Length: 90
Image (cartoon, rainbow, N blue to C red; front, top):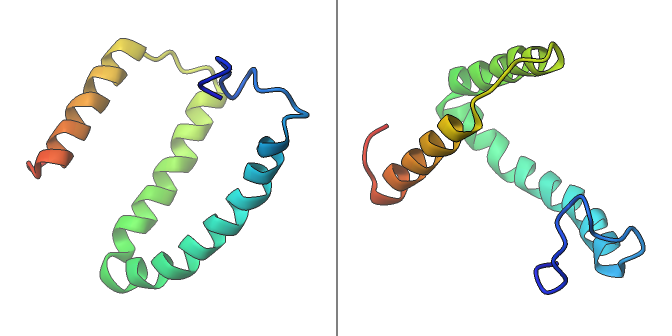
């Protein structure tokens, strides 16, 4: 995709590797679920429940047309990733 200057909006629908990715993605997701879900439920089920509740709230906010500050979000995301990479507390 990078070589052709494509992104997920512009990749041609008939590009063969796109179909391979589309077929493999749910398979990998299923394997990750089977591996991770029991571990998450054993160690931090309340965190999982909070995340699922948050997703519902944020989805409803997006559907209602919530305005977002993309620059602020990008900055916070970069800072979070840097701290996570360096092992710093959140």
